[in-house]
Image (cartoon, rainbow over all chains, first blue to last red; front, side):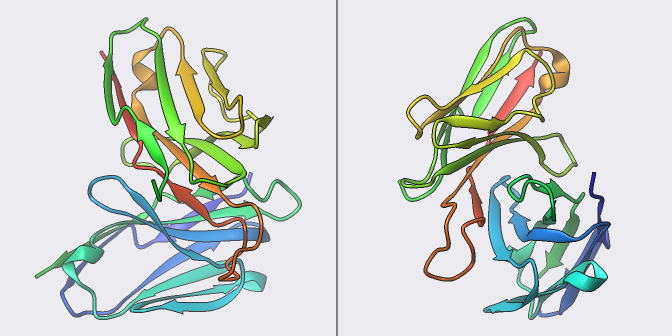
Length: 111
Length: 120
């Protein structure tokens, strides 16, 4: 099956700093989503982005499908951004609903 | 409610006990998913429904796991004769399954808060 690698595994920032999280995947995809899992376990959908670039406030994401990676940018980080960020993909030619998740990036934003 | 609702939020079961986990998806969402998340890992796919039809159950780890969605809305994940390795968070998610107004694609999925199962 498709492999999803996220980096870095852990990231510690001071409030106000910017960061870039990366997701590499091993095959072409027709579905890619970024999620934030807060400390209480709730998974929040950030972006549906199988290709292209999107922005939502301080967050933006870019997927370069031909090179099999996606980036999540967090600007002016806040303590509430802490948690685990997951990238999840579904391989083209397969079931586009069946997401494979990476292991996540644990982000800690200190005040 | 506006989001995906799951119950119970926390369940402690004795080994060998049967458990039932409920999911109430977002109203009007055609697709419903169950995922299992072990501590420190990403969620793993269990099963998928489109309306009342279970189209994919390839992720269910054993025949002790059973899911249903008889009327195409609420779903129940049942685990029979629970084992310690079943301890995990069980996440339900739903999606519209058609392009929405924001153009984000009908595949955008929304998760519930999860049911935390501990088998002792």
